Image (tube, rainbow, N blue to C red):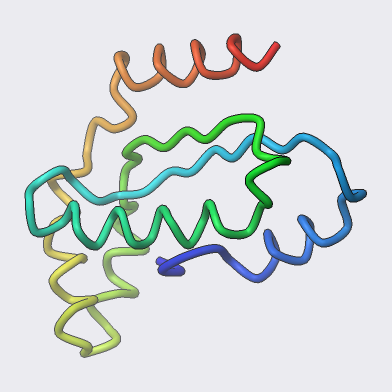
Length: 112
């Protein structure tokens, strides 16, 4: 919904002392089709860019569900692109899946 890193996250990251290892965990409601992947990769790069490469301990992303309430907010904007995302809400149901949760768990364990 934020098309990148929300301001609150950027503010939080600025408060972390220089040289601290940071792991990024990103959820999104985009699905993996060729058209979406171009946009998804661009948005994930925005997320990665908030942490210096030498401080990046790990980066993980997975699909999440777009809530019906958020889908309604997107529809209400009248902006065709956002309305298109809202229409994809049913495709996000059931995410994260058990496999995606296992992958998240394994990512966390790899950092420990």
